[in-house]
Image (cartoon, rainbow, N blue to C red; front, top):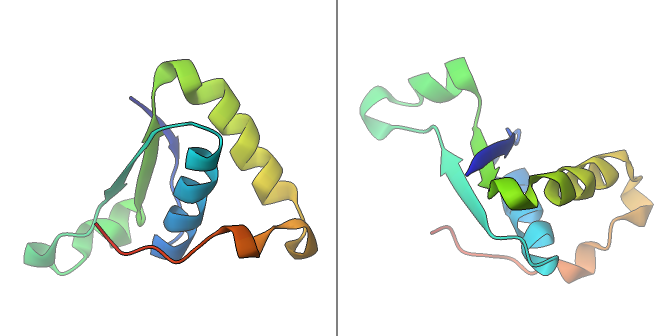
Length: 86
C-alpha cells in the first residue's frame, strides 16, 4: 500500500474513500487519532492518510486531483451516501 493523500478531516476521508471505491479502487483509511494521547498525533501529523495499492496509485491520484480541482457545482454530492465509521 502507498500513501495517496492526507485528508483534512474524517468527512473528506469518507468522501474520497467512496469516490475511489466507485472507480474500483480499494482503499485503506488510517486515522492518526489516539485516545490515549487525546489527539496529539493528529495535531502533529494531520487527520490521517488514505492508502491505495501501488498498482492503483496513478489512477487514484488522477481521480483525487480532478476531485480537488472541481468546483462545488461539479461534485455529484448525491452519489455519496452517508457511511458509518468503521
